[in-house]
Amino acid sequence: MKFDIVTFGSAVVDAFVDTKFNKKNKRFSYPAGSKILVNDLKFDIGGGATNTAVAFSRLGLKTGCICKIGNDNNGQDVLDMLQKEKIKFLGSKSKERTGYSIILDSKNNGRTILTFKGPGNNIKLGELPNFKTDWLYFSSLLGDSFKTQEKLARKLKKDGTKLAFNPSEYLIKKLKLSPLLKITDILILNKEEAHMLTKEKDVALGLHKLTGGIVVITNKDKSIICYDGKKKYFLKPNKIKVIERTGAGDAFASGFVAGIVAGKKIPECLKLGLRESESVIRYFGAKNKLLRMKIK
Image (cartoon, helix red, strand yellow):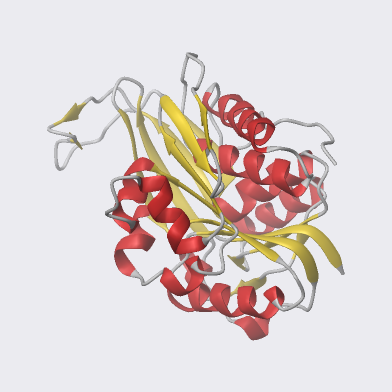
C-alpha cells in the first residue's frame, strides 16, 4: 500500500455556533444561569488530519489518513466522509466518543474553540497497518499519539519518507519538539508559534537551524515568509471578505505541501497554499470549498 502522502492528526465533529456576543477584555462573556439564543448552528467534520487529507486528495494526491475515532455515529460520519473523498482510513476505533469541537464565532471579534479530543491522543504504533508513503503530514496531538508520530516518522524515514509538520501553540508549550524538528523537511506555523520555538532575531533562519528544511511562517493578513536555507520568499495575502477562519491554517499548509509533493517551485507552492486558505475563509466549514484540481 503506497501513498503520495499520509496525514496524522485529529478527527472531530465541528459545531459552528454563530453568536452575536462581542469579546469583552478578549474574552467571551455569557451571563450564568441563562438560556442563550444563537443566530445559527452548522455542523461539519473537522480536525487537522481530515482537513488536510481532503485538501490533498482533492488536489489529486493518493492520500491516507491516520486518526482515532469512536465507535459511534460521529465516527461513522468521519469514515463516510473519508470514503467519499477517496481517502484511505489508516487509523483505529475506540470505545470513547469521537472528538467534538464547539466553535463560538463572533463575526466582529474572532472565535473561541472548545475542543473535546476524544480518543485522538491515544493512538499507538501497533494499531496502525503497514504502509509506504512519500510524505507524512503531522498536525498536533499529545500523549501516546505524539510518541507514535515520532516513532512512525523515524521508521519511515529509513525508506526515504519526508515529513511536513504543523505544530500548534499548545503543543509547543507542552512538549519537547526538538527531536521531531530535526527530522522535519517542511515546518509550517504562524508568527506567534515561530517566536515560541526560537529567540533569534531572524526567526526564519532560527527555525531553519532547528530543522534544516523548508520553513513557512504565516502572519494572518500580513506577508507569508518562506525560507529554504538559501533564499527567502514573501507572499502578501489578498484583501477579501472573511466569513470564518476555522481550517484556514490547515488549508494553507496542505496547499503548500501538496505543491512541494508535486515538484512545484516554492513561489507556486505559496500561491497554491494561499488559494486554498482563501477558499476556506470565505465560507463556514473547514473543507467545503477546498480546491478540486489535479496538480500531479
